[in-house]
Every structure is written in structure tokens, then in C-alpha cells.
Length: 320
Image (spheres, rainbow, N blue to C red):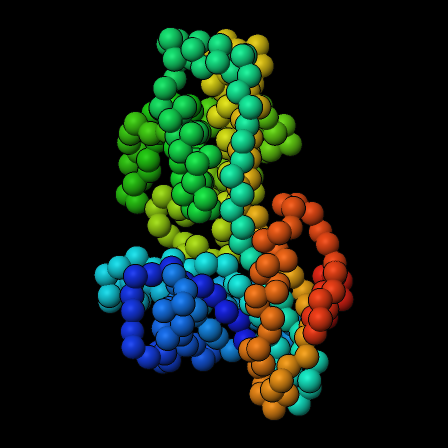
């Protein structure tokens, strides 16, 4: 079975004189503190056996956050795990090596202010419609972390749903009523924008799994669950925007889809190493790849060659 080495940037103020091998994990893990003198982050490196690189990546993103949880608690400062930056495969003996590099680029976005936007803002500010959902929608669109985007978006969604008397049944059989969020109203708002949504599915998956797991803190934010929240959040924001438009008597919902400012460039490449005797050759042409990516136009896909460096498309790495 292939063996992969994965590199994750970790944003933390922690420093250490030597590289640190973490003990107790299911796979070898090393904090490369020596490199922090040259980078604003620490590389977290792990070696994982898996049939393909995608399975190795899934394994890594499942157990590495728990290690950082323990470190953050033991040391105090916050620790944020970045996306996997580099994947290499054990190809000892081969001079031609291959790898996958992911580079994050932040590109400032500009949206031209239109006269109708100004009139709408003045109308809303002077109106008597809901105010808190406006705040939570803005906060949700501003955030980058999936959990934060979901939390603020859900706050706006639930605020618009309002409150109702909710029956709670005790183990003894007694029934009492408490004031809580109107779940039926929440479903009606969701179905108005997404007619295919059945109430039973909403109650189980949207309310029971997504909402309760986050706000009750009952589920670890593993990649699969975070992907669910990533897909749900834009739906919540669309519902909030539509409900606010109706509450303020707007003729149309403002086009408030937030513009992406963070782009991730996936580069599939191969090169000739000067160290074929090493399992994981780390003399990959970082400077050249990062220069090419930094000069690329956001959203465009390109393939070109450089001396001792060849770029590939994703299809060539499906079985890698």
C-alpha cells in the first residue's frame, strides 16, 4: 500500500527549539518548529498509508485536529489547522517524483456600489423591520471558517422563525410547555425557498443534525460534517435575505452573494529529484510553483512546463 507524506500549515504563536515528534497518534506526526524562523506558521507533517492520496488526506484531517485540541489546551495559545499544502508519495529509488501542492491566494474583491443599493440601505435603516437578522447575515457573510459562517447564519434564520410554545415530555409522562424557537415556522421559511424540502427531513437533518450538533456541541467537526455545513450555509443566507426583503417591502431581494476573496490553486506536478535514495524527496521546486500560481488569474486553469518541472491535470492523478 502506498505511503504518503502530508504537510499542513499550523497557525500558532508557539515556538520550540527543535522539531517535535508527537507521540500517541495513529500515524507519525512531526511539528517542524525549526522551519518557523522562515515561515509565519509551523508545518505539521504526517506519514500515512492509504490506497490513494484522497484516503490519506481524509485520515489526516480526521485525527490531526484532535492533536491540536490537546496542544491548545495544554499550552494556552490558539492553534488553527490550515488546509493541506503538500502531498508527496513514497517513491524511493525513482528519480522522477510527483506531488500535489495547494496554494492559498487572497485576492481583494471590489463590488461597484449602485444607486439602488444606496436607496435600499437607507430604506432598511429607516424601516421598522427585523434588525438582528441583518446583523447576523452580515456577520455570516464576513466569516471564512465554515463553523463561524454557519453559526451566524443560523442565528439570523432562527431569529426570523420567532418563538412558540414548545411541548416537552418528561420521562415520567408529564408534559410541560416552554418558550422556544418556532420550528414549524423555520421549516415553512426553508420550504418556501426550497419546495422539495420535506418537514421530516428538515426536522431530522437540518434541525436535528446540523443545528443541534453545533449548538449543543454534541458532534466533532470532522470533514464530512463540515462539508454539510458548507452546503447548508448559503441556503440559510438566501432564506434570510428573502425574508428580510419581504419584511421591508422590497420589490426584489438584493444580490448579496458574497464575492470570493480566497482562492485555492491545486497543482499536480512532477520533477526530477537529486535524492532518489530518499522515500520522500523534499527538494520539490517550491519557489517556481508558488511564483507561477501567484501570477495566475483567479479562477483560471493552466498547464505549462518549466525546466525540471512538469505540470499535470487532475485526471492523471486519479489513481495516484
